[in-house]
Length: 226
Length: 346
View 1 (spheres, each protein chain N blue to C red):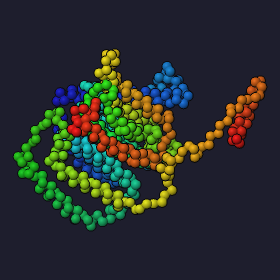
View 2: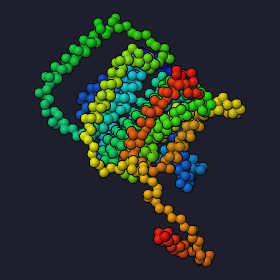
View 3: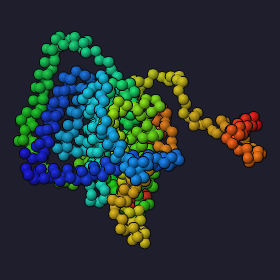
C-alpha cells in the first residue's frame, strides 16, 4: 500500500462516518461539528486528486467561515427533540422513496460505463512544480470567463437580497455615534489654566509627611478655585 | 514499506526541529512579555526564579502541568477536552509552509498563502467549542465574541493577502520573498504600506491580543472562553495564543519585510559588512521586532469597545484594502519601480 492509498482509505472512512454522524447524532451542535469534519476530510480527498487550490478553498470558505456562522446559529437554538420526532413514522415511506430515488440517480451518474476507467482514463500525474492555481486562473479568465462572471453577478445579487431581506428600515438606537465621538476635540472638554508654580514657603525643618499632605491639599483647592 | 517508515520518521524529525524551538520561543515570549511590560510600567517583572528570573517560564510550565484538570459539571466532556487541542493544532500546522531561508522549508507548496489563511481560520473552532462545552455563560459569551471577531478580521486579512499575492504573482511563500529581492526599499512595505497596517492590526485582532482582547475581557467576562480551564488545558490555550503571535510576526516579516533577505543587499560596503549573518537570523530579527511591537501595544493601549472593534474591521479595513487593491493594480500595470519593473503594460 502506498502512502496515498492509506491516506485515501483513512479519510474516505472518516468522511463516511462523520457524514453518518451528521444525521444520527442527537445533539445539534455535535451534528454541525460532524459536518465540519466531513468537509475537512473531503478536502483531504480533493488534495489527493491534485486539486490543492479547491481543497484549501473548501477548508477556508466552508470550514473557516460558513460553518462557523452555522455553528453560531445552532448554538443559540433551543431544539425540541420530542416535537421533531413526532411525525417520524408518517414520513418514513416518503423518506425511503427519496433515498431510493437519490441512489438510482447517483448510480446513473457514477455507473461503470460513464465513470469507469474505460470511459475516463486515469489522468497523468503532474510534476511537483505544476501550479494548480495558475491553471485554474487561466481557465477561469479565458475559457470559462462568462460562467465566472455570471457566478459573480449571482453572488452579488444574493448579497443585495440578503441585505434587503434583513434590513427593516433605520432604527432609532441609543448607541454611541462614532463620528461625533471622533469630532470631539480637546478644546470642548478640557480647560487648561496656566498658573505659576507654587513653591513651598515653609521652613525646611517642618517637612514631615503630614505637613506635605496638607500642602498638597492646599495646592489642589487652589487649582480648583482659580 | 521500510522506505515509507523512514520517510515518515525523517519528516517527523524535521517537524520536531521546527516545533521544539517554537515551544521554547513561546515560553520565553511569555517571559519577555512580563519583563517588558514590567519595565514599561516601572516594575521589575519576574526576577526570582533562577538567575535574573530566567527560569520563570519553566517553573510556570511545571506548575501548570502538575495542576488538576477540572471538568465543570454539565460540561460536554469529550468536546471540553478536545477544544484546546483543536485550538493549538492549526497554529502549529501553519508552520509547515514557513520558509526560514531559501532552502529551509518543511512543505514547499504552491498554495502556501491560502493554507496559512485556512489554518488560522480553523483555530476558531477550538475557541467556539471551548466556550460551548464548558457550560458556562462567561465562556459562551467569550467564544461568541472571539468567533465574530476572527470571522470579521479574516476578511480584511484575506484581502490584504490578495494584495501581497498580486504584487508577488505567487502564493508560494518562498516565491513571495524572492520577488522582494534587493535592498530594504525593494520590499513590499513601501508599495503596500496601507495593506501592511491592515494586515498587522488584523493579525493582532486575530490572535485576540490587547487592545483586541475582548474575548478574554477580564473586567467583563472573567477570562472569556477559557474561564473553566485549569492546568494543562489552560496551558495549551496559552501556548497557542503565543504561537499565533509569533506566527503573525514571522508572516509580516515574510510578506512585507523580505523574510530572510539581507536589508543591505546590493548596497556597497554594508552588504559586505553584514554578509556573515545567515538569512534565518534576519528573519528572526525581523519577527522579533514585530513580536516586541505586539507586547508594546499591550502595554500602551486600553481595550477597545466591542462596537469599535466591529467598526474598525468592517467599515475601515475592508474599504481601505479594496481601494488599495485598485491602486495596486495601476501601480503594477504602470510598472512602478523598483517593485514592479518589467511587469508594466502601459
